[in-house]
Image (tube, rainbow, N blue to C red; front, side, top):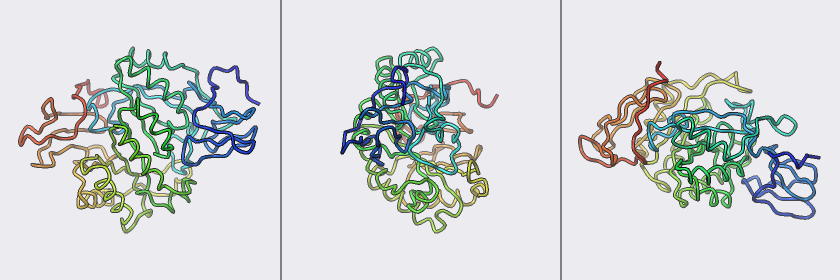
Length: 355
């Protein structure tokens, strides 16, 4: 039994009763949950025939980050986001960097209760330009994200999320009303066998339906793809992914190819060779993407943004910091006038990351 008087326990959104149980409709797992049991995420619970979230406002982290850390390179560059998380996740990634919070489930749930109005107040007081729902999978704290995002909008803040994309279409449609940008975090180019074996996800295909729904809802999309040695040796999955992005989204959607580092239950796998990352970037450009970046390799030329038309270096970065920004206020290349898909004006900030 759970204590329903606790402020971080709220009746969940997106569920229905079915044959004496409840079915959660929040993500593509569509868990059918018996009385006294949890969903796969470990933070949604059936008590008395109702589904409850156990992490409403129960924060495990609250930090001010450069937006480039999300990574969002083409959305309000140079801005700061107040980043929050809870416990739980609907994936079971064996390589998760944030496993201490994402894999905290059921009796291991922890955090400090901070209600949405205070979250927005903290973000404003710390000089943030927006709020980012991140670190663990924000789908599992949907109710908190939803209520906070509404308040953030009213107070002049934008909203972004870093998500695995497994949110249901119904939930994606609802959050799109208040979400401004999303980083969709893919692994191994969406390889089905990898998702099953190392993430306990039966089928990654629904992720792409969710991305399309977010796009229909007006959410700005950037995509990350964790490149793991041995997961896609012939790069067929990468080519298929890039073709899908070009055909279904846009050839100007930024793709971030991230370097894998051993962590959690996959410490026996070596970091991604730089040569493999560069090969992947070459393939992505061959397939038609105009903006391909390498992540987790500070100082590499593919951290920067180049004009797709003339090749001019227009945004120079180091790690999560913008070193120079040459685009006009409306996002045009100073050399040829090409309009890049940059949303929001550049906000210059102190280069604290380099100090």
